[in-house]
Length: 313
Length: 302
Image 1 (cartoon, chains in turn purple, cyan):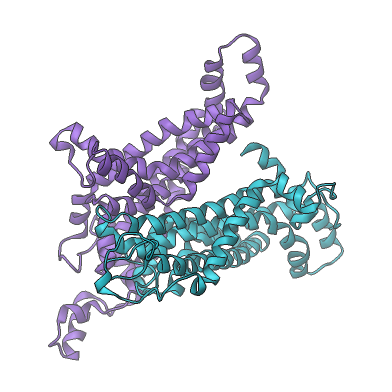
Image 2 (cartoon, helix red, strand yellow):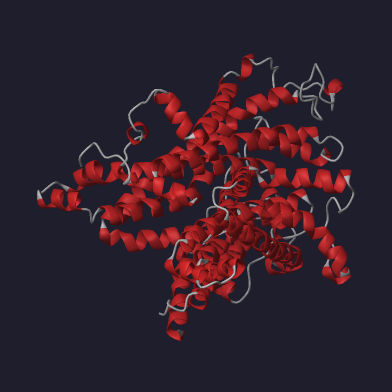
């Protein structure tokens, strides 16, 4: 088990190396010369060459990559061109709304989608199965900002139940915090719920046709115990895998959701950075999100042994 | 391989009509529609959108970029079916023309990423020594969430439809090449491939004649889903201001322009949103139908 964990952790290193290489190349090939920007309009070519040397921009690609990578490992993601603040500082300011939004979305989606998928599989072919699957197709098709605007229009503008936009920190109380996140979380959850419900139904259908399920039924185990204890636990591995892979959708969706609901999170930071061409910030955010995504999927891999003890490495 | 393969082996089904039983009284089209209602519904909706895109200039539209400050922000009416935006442009005309960008991006990304992904997948699956390197690079690319990767690529270039297509294609390529690679790895162990190898058929010919045709059916299903998500990503990129240049009317652009005013003039956002959702729904229905038609085993499960 320990050997497996170590092996699995080591396997993420080449992946992160490729990500780091790509993210660095992004800044390397970005148009615009930072030295020229720093030097300003009055600079002579000699000034620019001097600043180039100062910043180390005249060194070869691999040397610069190694240097940059060393700084990243030490927690230094560079300085924002626009605000002149350290990128790590900007990210730290914006982490709370995004992390809260994504965690709430995950919990909400799993709580809704898994029972939906189980129900659809249990009542396979019935109207409720069809209804759930039609909803899943719609969840895949309606873009996240469309869901956001429709929900905000109904629940915030028309009914006035929830705030239209903005984010309230948890330090201002749990209830206002939750209220500010409900609409964004449901919005962001749309496609995620569709994804999880679909895989849950598919896997449950497979599991429910197994012999041990029939045995459990015939020895008189209750319907709910069969579904949730016997079947769902054995269907867990593919479901958990999809929950992990779906985090990529959540990250992309967060960028949009935060724009729709004016939430000052990492997604909004990304959008602002793009509009200002603030490459160090873009780089930092992409690197951070990718790292988080790899980490989540590493945890998913490690959880397999918990759900299915037959998996021993 | 022999040509007359009908299900159960769905991967071997080369094209749609072969999957169908011989026509009965209902006739070929009728049977097909009856068996695959989602293909029919999705196809019909998509056809309508295609017609809109092609015939946008004659669908009672005016110049979608014509400014008319005197007629700003008119609500939908008999004269302006979908109203006008904050620069007085006719939203109906803009939405009709916007279909062009969405469909172009959707189809181009689907074709491009399938072609590139297939090439990489074939090489990686068939030429053993390249596999480790190619798949590590693909793993790395897949570790960057797709929309974020597209956003990062758009940050490097000026906004143009062509760049949008490239930026959306790059994150899709690893998925396709993984799919194709997996198929190739299992196909190359098939007896008919071994027979071809034993008979001294050159490698390129085995790939082209025996392996490639069998990857097409699953690839087609995948390409349909890519088409749908490419349209959504194009709209997202344009919506956050990193996509199609504002001068070209696209559904994402119209929504981006309506964003500031959406609380008072929600129709600016809702009309393009409805068209985008319906189009993506059509493509996804088509994809579901194709999957069911091409792989009856998966049809029962999903």
